[in-house]
Amino acid sequence: MRHVIALDVGGTGMKAALVGADGTLLHQARRATQRERGGDAVVETILGFAAELRAYGEEHLGEPAVAAGVAVPGVVDEEAGVVVFAANLGWRNLPMRALLTERLGDIPVALGHDVRTGGLGEGRLGAGKDADRFLFMPLGTGIAGAIGIEGRIEPGAHGSAGEIGHVVVRPGGIDCGCGQRGCLERYASASAVTLAWQAATGDEKATAADCAAAVDAGDGRAVKVWQDAVDALADGLVMALTLLDPRTLIIGGGLAEAGETLFTPLRAAVAERVTFQSPPTIVPAVLGDSAGCLGAGLLAWDLLDRVELDHTAATGSSEVTA
Ligand SMILES: [Zn+2]
Image (cartoon, rainbow, N blue to C red; front, top):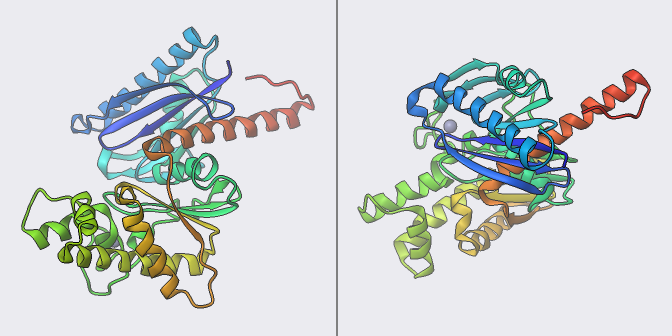
């Protein structure tokens, strides 16, 4: 059966799958990233993992994968197939596509940024299904965004479109790792809520999920911490929707797991702030941590379509050679 290799490389773990043409997951596997071994060792693990997946397809699906897609964190030049910078993984100017192409026997390889690739998955196969314009925002350790436009994700001129976590919502506020102060992700990420709730309770083990549970139980301190995060998030979202006018706003990541504890006040806070703008439908992500892997599979299929179209145009033949 025709299939592609999909790989989602994270700071702690890698998720992989063999994906059919209709988005079906035919095989899944995971592996620890073990980034403490250094950047070169991580690259070698990725190449070895990909080669194993190719062999698995050959043995169990009757043929090796026809293309591969890989999602990685950091600054990614998708056109060149190069990871420009990934602080978490110790990579700088890493020619990931060339390395994988060599290891996988010259099949087309697509490289994508992790959040944009997750957004592609959510937008086409998950919560954004059929939305022509959407914004995907996972609220996790940080906050990033993926701008979906008619089935593709806008990467920007320099590969950094969608970095809404670093929009300043509280000028002069909390220091951010990016060098600014008062960035959205310092107030509305799962990590930010965790820190604020720890400060409010004095409990160093408290989490954002604990805060959400305390909100549901009617704890006044939790309601204050939670509402501060929701207000900051709504301020950032209104900037984004004023600029982009998305039809659907998909919120994912750890904080979205609070469900209506987050979505009910968030919808209200956004509605309070818009004047002339048409508010988007605000929905939770549905694919969880498989969004990146499914998105990587879509990247691979899209690239294969383009390669085969080019081939058809060049030869004048509709015969497909994979
Ligand atoms: Zn920042």
